[in-house]
Image (tube, rainbow, N blue to C red; front, side):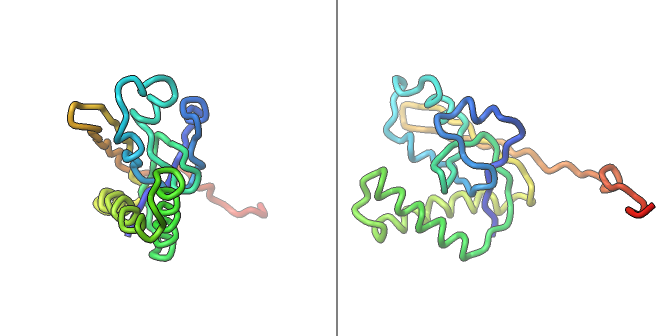
Length: 159
């Protein structure tokens, strides 16, 4: 199974999001956060989180790029439990048991998106507010094929 981890190419996420996700943390779309938003909510850093931010599952921070990678079932189970608790703490779910199936569905949707891509594929998300709710679109950036010789140093270390 695959999921996506936060990746940073520079420090821009530190400036554009109220709370940036940590490099390497597992991420999902997190579009549910914006389900009750109106145009008046779309300003400043909140607008950037809405427009282009993936949700980090450990920090609840946002990140612009994620990279597809393998995930083990035990990690997936832990993330689902964490997201269920997030729903209880921040969205008023009555308890983690009730929130667990919804958390599993959110993570499952992200896993489904990732499963169709090679490892190291980069993904971006873009959202827009429509009359019927939030619309998400994804952009896929394929991993570059690079010859190892471009990066390897040949020779012995003791020469």
